[in-house]
Every structure is written in C-alpha cells, then in structure tokens.
Image (tube, rainbow, N blue to C red; front, side, top):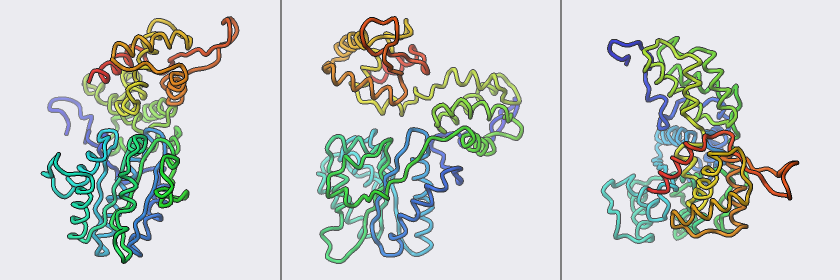
Length: 386
C-alpha cells in the first residue's frame, strides 16, 4: 500500500523478497521441463527419482526447485497421490542430525532437538511416510557441505526402501550445488544419480535479467514508477555476474531510495546509488559459502588491498599468517594458501594474475576490482566473530 501522505512507490514490496516464489520463471522453462520429465516415473510407477541442480549463485536453482515442488505437489494431489516436500539449506544445517530434524519438523514441529540417533530419526520418518502413504521430495540446498564432511545421509536416503521386498518409492532427492558434486558421491550412491539427472543453470545474460526485472516490477511497484532505462541499467550492472538475485536486490534498494526522497518514480541515479551500497559479492550467502580458513584468507587480502591496488602472493601470505593468529585458526601451508587464492579468484572475490613487466621474478599479483575492500573487511570480521 502507498505510504500515507507520500507518493505511491511499492504495490507489494514482498514480491522483491528472496522468499517469494513467482508463478512464472522467465528463461528457466527448459530446466523446469527437464525436472518434470525426470520425476514422471514417480507418478507413473511410484519410483523414487533423484536430480542434481548445478549453477552459480543467483541463477534460479533454489527458486525453481520450490516452484517445481509446489506444482508437483498439486499435480500429484489432483491424481490422488500424497506428495510432501521440504527444503533444507545444508549450510545453515550442516550436520546429518540437523538436516533430519528439519525434515521431521515437516510432520511434527515439536519434535525434540536431542535424544534421537540418526537411525531412530530415519525410523520415525519411515513411520510418518507409511502412515500417510506419502512420498517425500527432500531438497538439499548447498548439498556439497554435507558431502565434504563425509556424511552418509544422502546414501541412507537413496537406500531408504531397500528393506522392503516389494518395490516402492518413499523418498526422492533434489540436490542443489554451485558445482557438479557427483565426484563427491560414493559409487553406490552415484548409481542412483545418472549423468542425465544433472540439470545445469547458466548465468543470466542482460536481456534475460531485464525480463526477470520487468516481471518483478509489475508485481512489486505501482505503474509508471520504474523507468525502462532503469531496468536496462540494472540489467547491465547485474549481467557482469549473471545473478538475478543481485539484480532484484538493486531494484529493491533503488525503490527504497526513491521512497526516502518522496519521489514518484525510480530514476537512474537511484540505481547508481543502490549499486554503490549493494554489492553482489557481499551477499550473506556468498560469504557463507566460504569456510572459516578461506574467510580468513580473504580478510587478509582485503586488509592489504584497502590501502594499495595490488599485492603479491608473498605479501598476502604474511597478512594471512597474522589474521590466522588473530582468529585462533591454524595457519595452512603455502600450497593450501595458494589453493585458497585460486578458489577466491574463481568465485570472483579477487583477481589473481601473473606479474608483468617491472616486477622482479615470477610471481602472482592480486587485486580486488569489484568489491570495496573496507565493506568486505567489515562483513568478514562480523562473520568471523559470530
């Protein structure tokens, strides 16, 4: 609703929240169709199905999984089949116990936090499914976090029905990750994840981002509030990352700035100001995708780069040693630190490249071009002190 006494800007600001799942997902029709095809045997023959969604941050993996589950649940209900689903973020719930607890709370919100072993929890889940004659689709977001810890939970869920003599499907899995994690699966689990069960999500281009923004503008803003040139500008900015989430964050912030100034429309200057305070690589999810040692390595680099344009790997490693001691983390060796540099470069936090002319010896120089070092330092220090 418009603010009393002020210009109408937002019709429904909730349509710009991360939790909102749109009815229509532009430029993800192919992935949705593939997922529906993969799960067709569940309806036809009651066979469990598994899928892996792979793509960078902001490419629509989580939203599409929710859209699919909502649609599939309704599709199954119309045909007399009880399908339940639950999404668990494995970075927020990083243990087998915690993931299973989140699943069980789908049936009993008061299920005790402690006192049940993994096998006991699996047995409770089995009883719920048998009593309701239900099929569960478990969506495990950031599934690589569990796999890197050597968890057996995914194996246990794919083998959930083995003790039954007659064929039945009780649980299907949708795993979500920024990278292809099939190599993390043991051979027996891998057998349930065929190569053609991998659904890939590429980065959005500028035109695709504009289409997504246009949909959100129609849902969230009153007519004629957001200019077409603003949509073009936001799409251009976000196309560097191919990240729809970032584009929507900039759109939201630009609208808030217009509201603060009692203006009746969003103008390009609001977009530029929004970009200055909304950094794609500073999103909470992007930082939380880093483990603690890698966060410390990035913090060390940011501290060095706050006062200079480039640092060498030698300078970076010295800063890393100091930061590790400050936060009580064991300093890793040179080889592991170099791996951190490569990973942070691949994620877009830094840029590492061979030194050119004018630098004695062969080394790597590191820069930070997209994210203000000071903002990154504040965010990382806050995360590390939690």
